Amino acid sequence: MLPLRFNFSFYPTARLTRPRRLASVNGMIPRIILVVAGLLLSSMTFFVAAADAKPVRALLITGGCCHNYPFQAQQLTNALAKLTPVEWTIVMEGKGTQAEISLYDRPDWAKGFDVVVHNECFANTTNQAYIRKITSAHRAGTPAVVIHCAMHTYRATAIDDWREFLGVTSRRHDHQGKYPVKLVAADHVILNGLVSSWVTPMDELYVIEKLWPNATALATSLSEQDGKTYPVAWVNQYGKARVFGTTFGHSDDAWRDENFLKLVARGTLWAAGRLEK
Ligand SMILES: [Zn+2]
Image (cartoon, rainbow, N blue to C red; front, side, top):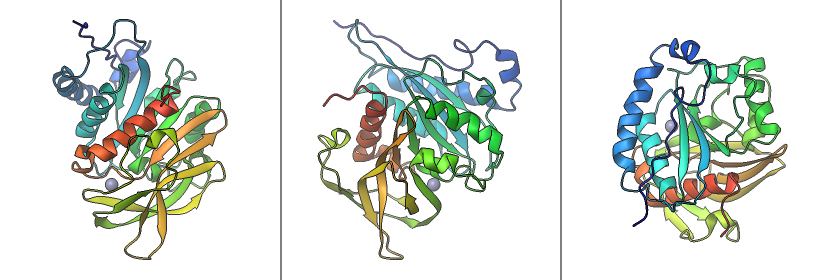
């Protein structure tokens, strides 16, 4: 029988050398403990890994306005665990639409991670130096996954660094609805094994003003409001880093949808350089 292996490493316990500073962030520790409890229970089913498999080291940055982040973290980690062992570090921090995550104060904050998943929602954070602490690490080569409200994070700032990193510029979304999804790059490895089209649960269609030159759409949906087709999943090259993005992921039902979960899980593995077929 294969060994049961837990690959969780939760911030700030194992990885960080300055836990006292981090513990001072209001409300962060209880939130993380809450997530740990939920994840450990739910992950027991899936963390059966070959003894010699090298886990993907993934950092999830999540929190902020408007969404059920503990549930989303649970669904994301479970979806990845079905594909490969992952050692997660989860930073769930910040409330409302404005926050600066203390992790980024570390110059080497991205060091040691195969992929960073951004699922945070801070539209009104505008500090340019702060934003460039994040994008510079990715430009130097740390792969990333960007989900839903990450596309509206730092929306109010003047600089385009974050938007270029994402691969899309978006500032608003259409009404909630059930949107047909059409794959438009069927030969891309991320889409291998996915159905060619499906309809989302209740979700938000983000209006994409610009697809940046290094980005390629993988899937699109049609706006019921303006009749235009917008990318809803894409890949991007930002400096030396691979980036996978999707604008879906608003509701709990979206995070229960097998098509969405498979897309995000495969996109995460691809960004990390671990998706071979
Ligand atoms: Zn949303």
